[in-house]
Image: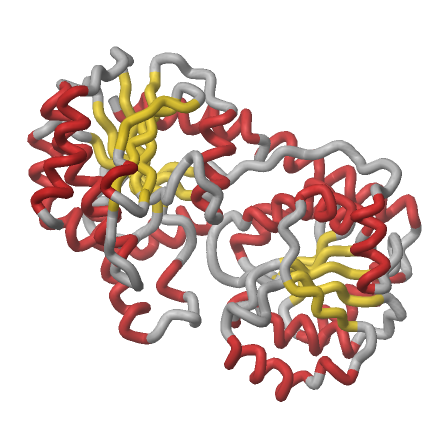
Length: 410
């Protein structure tokens, strides 16, 4: 890191007057609370926007593209530390995370922060934390980590990076005081993986808000439905990133094997995520010959998405790697019938309010079963799914869990 860059942010810190809160938690791994990039940023919004414990002050790092934009501001009672990181490519986020970690140490020492906790998101910088864990302990900093899913199992990464992520995950876990796993399956996985002394293994899921049922269709929603030739209750929905571990090949083959006359609306970034993977899917499934399958590309309009989820006859979820998937929570909050790939992570969420498949044949059977379901049974599935979301996955419940865990550390 250039010396000028270091001095710029440190001068800003030196002039800053920190709020006097009993406990201070620094969230490291965000691109930004005030920015909307992806899953971690959505997680931060859900957590921070519902926060109510006045004993705990949250600090959130934000990556900016120029040293001139470095500053410390308060947004919705969250202290946002805007930090410049000029690195690009695959090494950018690990360097940014490590930079933020070092700045936290400087902040804690310079501003005499009380009861500091560093909460790292993901498993990118395990070796660096391992090498410096004694330094953090000397500063009185407690270490916490949300590892997300089993990142090293994602086939989109090359073998070398998968090996690094596995080693980094172990070293990160061995450097932390507490792991906050967003799925009981992930907590159990780490309990088996880690040998010898282990951190505290906690469980606090990702959250979701259950939206109201949609009303009359606005013109832009009708335009979307007309564009893709779909109607209420006459399609199944797949929504997720176009990567191998989301089992698109299995889902396409299973759907094509089913006897349904309904369509399959696929909302995914198939044109930009992994072009070679799309070529493989076309060659292995020949889905283009099945007029029922609609590749609709991406959709980010939340209002249209509410209608798409609620008007689907069923949602098919193929994710096989990771913890509690936000897309699954959103589907269970809105779509009555959800058909999930039979992975332990999905079982912890779906329980008896969903159907499960583990290959093309069982998916085809599930679709045929749902096709024949009575209106009353479909409604009952939806009621059960939303009850689970409200009881165990509401943001208010998640906020309470994080408050409990943070206070237990100090």
